[in-house]
Length: 412
Ligand code: NIG
Ligand code: FE
View 1 (spheres, rainbow, N blue to C red):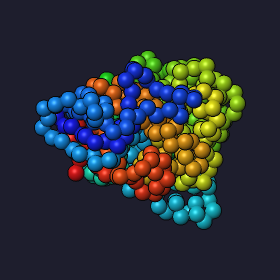
View 2: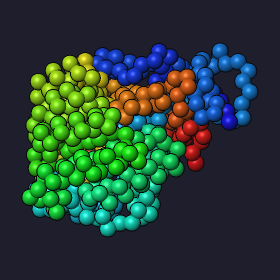
View 3: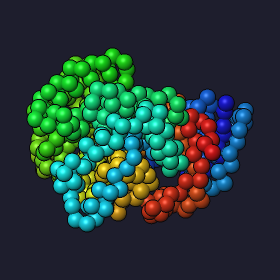
View 4: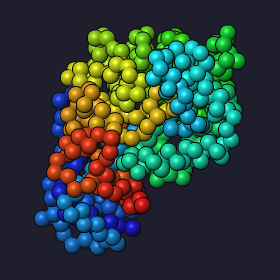
């Protein structure tokens, strides 16, 4: 199967040099080709360039972009898209004045979602999740990381990871799976957190890793959840199975999780709504990418992570949706990009880099997706007729997507 897209007004995020991510000042540069073509063969980007250089190509299908723009699909490196039901009641409780932490302390929050998921069959969980997967595909996401963490028992964590595996096998998106057994301590272990961590590390991790169900390991490093000592144990144990970590840190409190993550070669540290100068210094000396979640701050009404400061310090940055039933019940990356611009003061170029190449890096997919580069998977967005890329974040709440292509195939 081959496909030629011609008369592209602007082909965005063209990278001929092999780069893994972009950092600091380089994030404000989004290499593009005006009046371009793009040729896709067997699901991969085969060639691209200026229309005037287009030679006679034998192709099965031609799309005349007629002045539309083309860019790589969004790479959403932090989601909890597999969950059961919803928590709209807690949303109303928050509107009436309770905080996220107060709701969790009353037995709501993650434990509420865990109860729901434990009582949901694998088939039902798959079907509920598939609907959300289809909706984020329509919104331009072409690669996604999905966490477990609403099971909190061996059986239910296994059920979640099996559903993620099924999504991996059946969806046209690129999918990475993260084991987040240490998302919250379940009630059965209320007075024995140590016992729960042992279950996670001695039973779940070996079994799930043996069955190839996990690509990464995660911990919610936060007051009332898991301490820095717990985090260190979990991250180190992951490394024994050759599994790198991506961890939830600095959402509400600064505990020191960033140092542990960086020292243990974590792939990413995510959230960072509260951050101190020293954390930025530690990140600058390591190779862990910061991932910020603007729509989580929007929905909970908490601090926005200091994304501007992270970029101005020379760091790379990825942005992700955090799609989950409690703190960000939306996987709309167009809104994530828009919110990163309006609330975190990123430019359009920085936000698109954060949502494509850097998002791909933050889930270990930088060789496969995230830029228009030869041999990468042809996961593409064809935009509406727009005059400038700034119309992407400007159109907040909507999107500028005309058509989606995944693995070189038009998605209807
Ligand atoms: O990334 N902060 C921890 N985990 C999720 C929220 C989980 C939930 O409320 O269900 C997050 O925001
Ligand atoms: Fe999260």
